Length: 251
Length: 277
Image 1 (cartoon, rainbow over the protein chains, first blue to last red):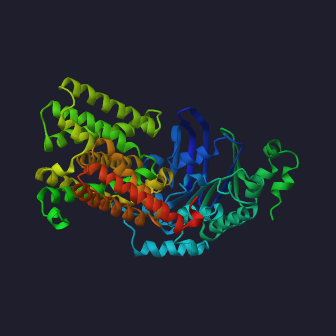
Image 2: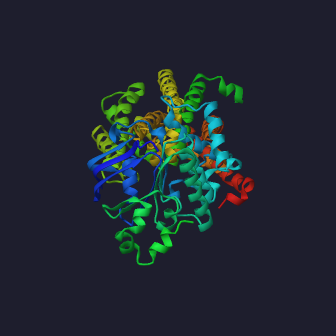
């Protein structure tokens, strides 16, 4: 790990029309980190990652990606994003899997954003890597939840991003598919050195893979290594007395 | 009168040429609008076009000049709908309803002050493609060319925002800018389509070809192509039927479009029985 700061926030607060959802959030993520972002419902986990992607307004404080202020950041090809809701995909949308993954390549293009033969090769490679090449000509509306999740992951990693942001990616998956998915993300983190920010409710599962934990409830309650989290008083106060055995025993 | 004889008339050639170009624009834009759940923007802008046509007639501006009056007004209205949606705590359909009400009420007041609903204003309501002038064809042709060039240049960005605003933003697509381009192109197409099918039926030119294509298309490019083919074919077939049967061209074009939709709807149930529900 080079120690390069990939994500940094300083006293960040983010706002919707209804008001503020996060206050005074300061943390930084180094290259190669795998950060699990956990917390109760409505704690601001999704808002935090969305504010880092410019999808939610920042009303106070600052955020930067790769050392660049978010407002000036333009290297979106360095960032892959897998959203929370599979409902985001209109079931009657007529795009094929290949076309959908191809949309991820637009961040590499200048005007007019045209895809070429190299893009097609890269799309095919990514589909092969995730074991979904045979779905290439299928419409996205015809896919199962697990298949769609992998297609959207392919879209997120098709540019070989340096930072991958995943917002509750396993919410709609069965336990077996969920386990495979976590394993796949861990492999991307280890083999490619991709920095991961993963929002989840599944504190137990993420503990097996994440190198750092960020526990959020409107503000940061804990941020540090998974080992520190396991030993911290916050852990048992948040999850109960028996949580340490359940979550901290890495398989 | 046989088909060749019909096609030899200058006014029919003009109607077919302009009608096909306008239908091409409407059907391609319609795919993006339907998928972005902005289908009714055509209706809303058509009502504004009614208001702008009443302004043009009140100013004694006809034919090409009325198009030139309508275009900036309808384009401004399209941006107004966008701003109301983005900043006004309104959903897209409510914003369209507001702007639509403004357009139609302004049109009624102006028509009333200007001496009532004359033949010109009624021709805007129901369209009259067979009366299109040479100058109007040239204007329509140039605008269609411009819109097609812009659609080609921004194709992938329009595709990205139709798929998902959120994902498009994280791919570096300037979503507000592309949205503005989409509604401005729609505004231009609606003004042109006013002559083809009239204010009452404009939205069908945007929605029906897209709705049919969505029944059968397996791929986004295929969807755009199918919609364009249906839009253009409907205009040609509709105009020929209207002349042979002495029926209004606008309603004939829309009825042909609806028949295409019915055929696509049934074909889907035959070709993809598993995915038909």
